Image 1 (cartoon, rainbow, N blue to C red):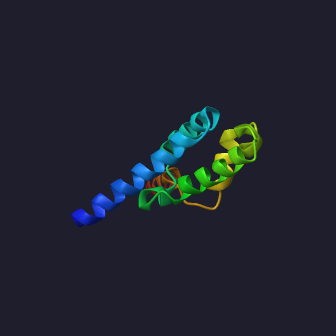
Image 2 (cartoon, rainbow, N blue to C red):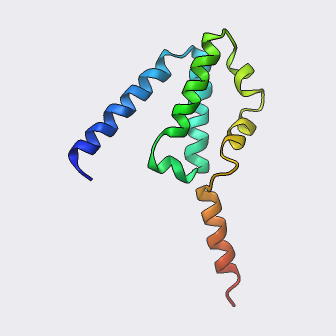
Length: 107
């Protein structure tokens, strides 16, 4: 990876964080919990970029601009909201389960 790529990635991340900080407090709290959840569950595509998280910020900005509370946007079950967004995505948990299944069939 080139130094320019690293610097560009840092600039993009800083801009991303700045967008989160401009959200209302309740949105920031829920966003940070979603972020932690995704880092724990590990959607594979998060390792290649922040597209999913950026999409959530877009959605949150629209909700805040409309005067909605964050739970009006996500629903009361935020984990279900998160799971629904990645339901068709491979996660690191899936990869781990596949490796366990393959290892468990050896005799």
